[in-house]
Image: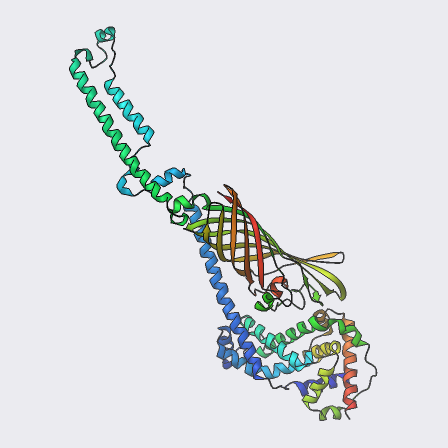
Length: 388
Length: 182
């Protein structure tokens, strides 16, 4: 029997061949479809959340632009209840100076030379014509006014002091927002962070099973076929973040973050085995985080934070032997994070902070990396914050 | 017949899957899974691994079904997804065994067509699943998918000569096994 006949007979024999499929196969497919559906919903929700947060951030940034830097003492006075009418009160020294000037003007004799009187071109009050008695009465009257105004000012000042004493007796968190949080309402942070890599037996790995990357097998049409387990380096990030208060003890922050992911594995490229191929992924991301300060003091703040980040792989590079190739990565990487943090203000406008957090990287069909092998990671972020 | 969509019922089934309707997905699965499991077994050999490939392929199918425009038969399009998923699995796991297996074949016996006629499809399936990976992949792509050697070379990242050689050896290997069953 020649080859073509042999092939044709085989084809006809197996063309309609079927195999019985176990019911659990469909259950597995259904489970994965449900997970994909949830992911799609989450992706949509996180997209709208990030968009809304970004709009909010832009809005806050625009509308708070005209805020003036005012001395703390003046802010405190502004907090005094309306019935004391302190808004109409000028500073004490100025008021006393005004009264003294007023009184002095009233009593001071206007000296007019005989010559100018004779010329008659300047209208003046001729005090020479007033009797000595009238002058004395006027002086007494003006002095009384001066004393009355002084008393009035002193009373108001007492009320103001009383109010200020009341505030000074309150604990930090009871003080008015503008007084308490003025110093750190807008912050700029320069940060860097590293993520831990869990060992195979780690509970972190147990909590977050690896995503099945669609680019296992050939790496995204690049002709690179991984043939060994990957060894991952610790991911490293650098970033710039702006953080601003949105309510008492609540902050929102966003910025720009760069992340470098590196891994090594053996791969076959054009039928040639390359050991220790270096895979380098460069990501740029926009994080959006919400912070709640649960501990405030002059020097130290502690807070909880939650948020997310959307990242785009801007460069995917493979180095093997003396060769290198790049690859285009489509789609975005979404992640969610939850953690706590502490910041220490060692000088008035500069502080250092430390944010340990859990980060979960969603399955977004990204290239194989530590994020697909270990989606749930511990991240340790440290940086400097500057009060604007 | 409406374009390449077999019939109206198939079009409705596809539309249901595009809309993410679980019932439609289930019906599509029931329609194709027995035949596609056979395809997967032919490529990966092991039944349990074939089930994993089947799952992956159905997930890809449901995710990509919106891209099917009705050009060509739907079953052909579905089959292509399953073959590609199986190939991806093979490339990932067994590419290094490729060259070693080529050396393992000897002989060039022809087989009587009557013997082949007497064999049931499940027996042939069993023989093919026992075939070394390298032979089996080229054999499947050429005999059952109708790929040319040029297409096989491109898909497996091998030379056309290598594809021809492996096909020839796979036929010899299979004939030898069939004869040994006499």
